[in-house]
Structures are given as structure tokens and as C-alpha cells.
Image 1 (spheres, helix red, strand yellow):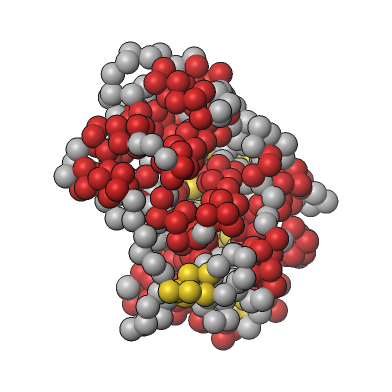
Image 2 (cartoon, rainbow, N blue to C red):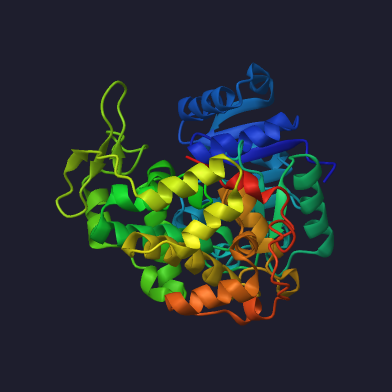
Length: 434
């Protein structure tokens, strides 16, 4: 991998391609951004420079159109595909790439949910030997996690070389994932987000985001997160998972009818034509929130509940044990919702051990991808916060949630250690008071 001198970014004009390419440019790798037009590729370069706040990147990146692929792609050591999350579209670029790339060049996809093996169907053996998933999390400039999903024909040398390059040159935290829909992070994270959408239809968007806000261990509330991600992206990921996955929470994978209607009406989140999503945030105007029933917007009410405000204050004061005791013991429907989501996240994560990450990793790979890819408290971090496996299992059983065998098998010393089970340093930084 010391021979990686030039990289082609297919889809460099898009948000993910632009920001991913910037990671390579920061490492001093020359980049060619390919898109439908040179102007669109240049817009990707401008966005990368703005996001990185460094004009230095300009000297490492050049714009190209897809029409230039035949001329320029054979010079590239790595082809990094970042076009839209669509199997047929990605495959069409791989067909062309396979014909013109030089043998031995790395080809990767930044796909967040599509099968690596399926994407390479029909390609040459040399393509398959050098093809893998390299999934940076959005935004790559802020989130270090990198899911590496290998093709069955990858050699040990390729796996080790790509892993080392991403870690040493790109400052990525690598998590090896198995070739499953959604891989690890999105399989778990988007189940949580989609269940929040389901609950929002009944309880309201503002209430669910307030109850599941940063104090419960994530950088942003779930529905505000979907505005940032893009509603169409969420739908694509969940549709792929729901079609190909059956598990203990399959009922939470289906896209809600009102969510589909939002997309049909052009409500895509902050990237939509009018930047509307679950919320409309305009400068010097009150924030508005959508009603899932009518799809009309109303001014936010700034609702509060005493147990939430007390927990947030304890977290602000650094009294994490007191905050967790409130979350565990508060009474009422709203407190039940908070516990359902926290415990459901733990349950769903532990059930995925050996399914989305190698069995020998235990919960560790999932912990790292949720911490460094989503900025969420990792699942075994929550086990520690709640008082250990035994206490967590009791809470799950009381809440009527399935208990994974992988959780039952953890040693239970009945003490709060907070940062040892999950092996992710400083997990309290993912608990915010906001």
C-alpha cells in the first residue's frame, strides 16, 4: 500500500465522495474527483476545502468528468466508489472500471448497506481479489470509524495492507464487519432510528427527540439525526435491511407510510429542496416541527419532563450514577419509552455479535463502531452504566425485551466500572447534558 500515490473518487461531487476524498488528500494522496461534469466535480472539491478549512487540499485534488474515466482511471492505484446507494448504479460503474483499471489496483465501495459480494458479481478475478468495502461514516472529517468488509477472494496481504493504510495514513479506526445488510453500524443504528420514527407517529416528533436526546448517550436526537442523514438515505438503508433480514426486531424495520409521504412531498431533511425535514430551522425564525398525521409544521413547544431535566443536571454535574438511577427508576409512560430504547439498543447489539462482526471480537467491534461511527455510548458501556450484566438483564426482562445469550454469558461483578467491559476509552464523553 506504499504504492498508493493516486486515487480516483467516483462521485466526488457528492457529499460523501467529497468528504471521503478529503481524507485521502489530507494524507498527501493525489486525488481525481470524477462526477457527471467537471463543474460538479469542482463543486465537490470546493466543499471538501470548505469542510476541511484548508486551501492546501486544492493542490492534491483535480476535477474530472465520468467521460474522462477511460483516460485517467488506468493511472490510479485506488478507485474509491462513492456514488448513490443503488446496486444497479454502482454495478454499472464497476463494469466500466473493471475494463479499464490497471491490474492490482484497489477498488472499494463506500456503500453503507449493500452486499460486497453481490456488487462484484460478474467482475474479473483480479477485480474481486482487490475489491472490498471501505465505509467511512458521515461526516468522515469528524467520525473516525471505518468499516472494512472483505470480499471472499481478498488475500491476507490485501486485507492487512488496506487496514494498515487506513489506520496509519488516514487515521481511521478500523472495524472488520461481515458482509451483511447494513454491516454493523447501520444495521444497529438505523434500527434504533427507524423505531424512533415509529414512536414519533404516536407520540410526536418533538417528544421522542426530547426523550431520546443527547443525555441518553448520542450526539444528536434520533429524528434530528435523520434530517442530517437525509430521509431518502434512511429509506434506502432500511429497505435493503427489511428485504434481506429477519431477526428478533424485524417489526421495527419497515418504513412508515407517513415517512414515505414526506419523501414523496420532497421533504428530505436538511438536504431537500427546501431544507425541510422533521424540523424546519430558519435563521431568526422559531424552529418548526412536523406533525406526522397531517404533515403540517407547528412551532416547537419546548416540552419538558422532570425526570429528564434532573438526569440532565446530574450529567452536567458529572454525577453519572445519579443520572442513571433516575433513568432506571423514574415512573410513567415517558420513562418507559426511554428505558425501552436504551435497553432495546443493548439487546439488539448483543444479538448481532457473530452475525455482523466476527464472533471472536465479542461485543468489542460493535462497541467501537457505535462509539466512533455514531458518537453513541457503546452498548456494553450502557451495561456498565446500568450496573452490570445482571442488573441490565433484570431491566430487560421487566421491559419485555429479549435477552441475548451473549449478554448472559458476561461476568457479573455487580459493580459499576463504566469503562472496562466495552474497552472504548472515556465513554462518558458520549453522555452529554444537552
